[in-house]
Image (cartoon, rainbow, N blue to C red; front, side, top):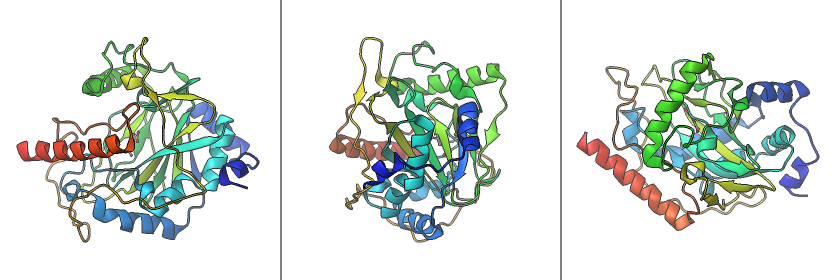
Length: 319
Ligand SMILES: O=C(O)CCC(=O)C(=O)O
C-alpha cells in the first residue's frame, strides 16, 4: 500500500489537536522526525545557501525545492505522520508540491498563503513548517494571528491593487494596516527542534524580527494542496482570468535525485558576522523575486531562480 493510501486510513492527531486547528488555524505537532534526518538536512543544504545571508540575515536566503536533490527534505515533506494529519484536518488526501528551506529568520511581513496559492473550492492548501533547530524569541520565530483563517480571504482586488508581484509590497502594507485594525495579538512559534507548525492557507503569518543576528534558524516549510481541486495563483489572477497551476506533486513513494540548479561557491561553516544595528528591512530594492509563477515549467522555474539570484546579487552590489 502506498504512503498516500495509508494516510487515508490512519489517525495521528488527537481530537484536541484537530479542534485547536479548527479554532485557531494552526497547530504545533511533534511528528517524530528522527534527529539525524534534521541534522543531515541542515548539513547537506548548508553549502547551497548564498553566504551573503551570514552578514545580512533578513536578506532572502532560501532554497526552493530542495526535496529534488536532498533526500531528507523529501522525507520531511512526505512523512507519513504529516500526510495522515493533513488528511485528518482537511478530509482530503494531502498533495505536497513545494519545499522552501531557510538558514535564518526570514522577517517576512505578514501575509496569508491564499495570496500565493489557492484552490477551487477554496482553502484546500496548508503549510507545514518544521524547526530544524530550537527556535526562541531571539532567532526569528514564526509570527501568526490565531483565528484569522476564519476571516474572508484578502485578494489583490480587496486591497485595490492590480494583480502581479510588482504590487506585493503594497499588498504587505495593506495587510499590515488590516492586522493593526483587527487588534488581534500576535503569537510566536517558540518551538523545540523537530516540532512542526501546520498552518491553514488563510492564517495571517510571517517571520518575526531576528533579535540575535549571530543565530541561525534553520527551517523547512512544505506547501500542500489537497486532492480533487483546481489550483491557481491568486496573485496573478483577476475575476476574468484565473492563473491555474499544474503543480509537480512530490511523490511520497518515489524519490529520484535530481541535480540542483547551479549554486554559489560552497562555504565551509557558518561564520555569523555581527550586525551592528538590528536591520528589519535592509534590502528595499529589488525585492527577492517571489516564487509562485502560474503554469511555470521546471525549466522556467529554474530560470526564474537564476534571475532571482542575479537580481539579489545586483541589489547588494548597488546598495
Ligand atoms: O519562516 C518564516 O520566517 C516565515 C515563513 C512564511 O511566512 C512562509 O513561508 O509563508
